[in-house]
Length: 95
Image (cartoon, rainbow, N blue to C red; front, side, top):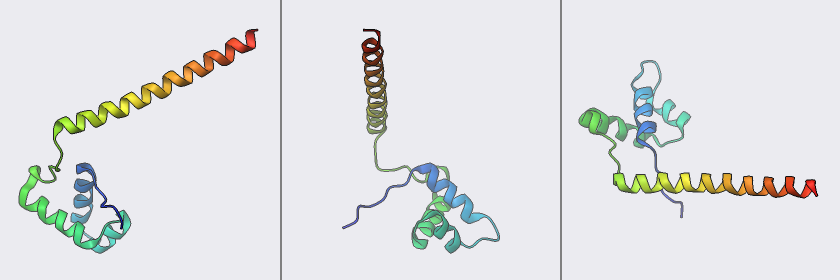
């Protein structure tokens, strides 16, 4: 069974913007960005009905902050480990 894909608010807003441009069909836009046509049409309808409050998501701001902090922690650990390995490498060359 395939996991459900999640799209960011910015992705949805850009997709709706592209779909609202004249000269290109919704079907063509959906194919180019890799979503189902009915999904894109639902996003367009939601954006039209709710305006700026559309695509709020289901998560909480706190959850987003925790995810951001976890990503930052992973990045900092990678940098630390790299610097530790580099220091050990250069120290071994001095001997």
